[in-house]
Length: 245
Ligand SMILES: CN(C)c1ccccc1CNc1ccc(C(N)=O)cn1
Image 1: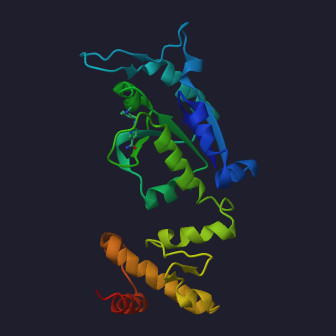
Image 2: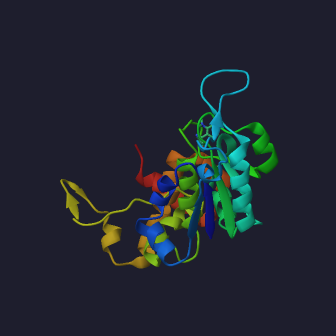
């Protein structure tokens, strides 16, 4: 998977892929990041990328050029890649959209700054807009990094088997089960006995029960969307019986 990111702050985006799971995935060639800085494609001496808004008002708007030249350069390197604009008015990023993006070989992520980009460029060059939530950020770089991290984790091999467990619950449309590690006691709180039993089947059953129960409690909407099997309903009943009051 290759990410081509168009941004005025390349170093910000490279920061994501220099550490941990993502850093190792880049080292292993499982994911690739190429950044394109519109300032490098500006014709004028001052490398102008923004200008005052028609109609007046505060702030600046990103100009069509040099952005369009930058997009075309990135497209030339990745002809089939969709150009995705990170924007507060984009479609909401969710699990299914992340899974769909992970099917692409390449994506071009366009990061806006200032008050945004001239609308004519969006009309002419953007394939889809994505939002990571209903809030405004100073630029599209953080949303782009959120997209890259979420997508990269679904690329085969990126998560060793040790980390892939964290995908199971969410991929299954449920919230995650609780996690514990040493020591066995913290003050008067101990680790649930089943997790010390060595009974892998019982542990798996307990984890699914917890994931189902916690999803019911915290995100019933997810459970409605997903539906539950008869076995899972039985686990839910058990969970509720154990969590009275
Ligand atoms: C500079 N701004 C206000 C702006 C205006 C228009 C487009 C992009 C930007 C960049 N900022 C973003 C981008 C995405 C999100 C999100 N919710 O995904 C939040 N903020």
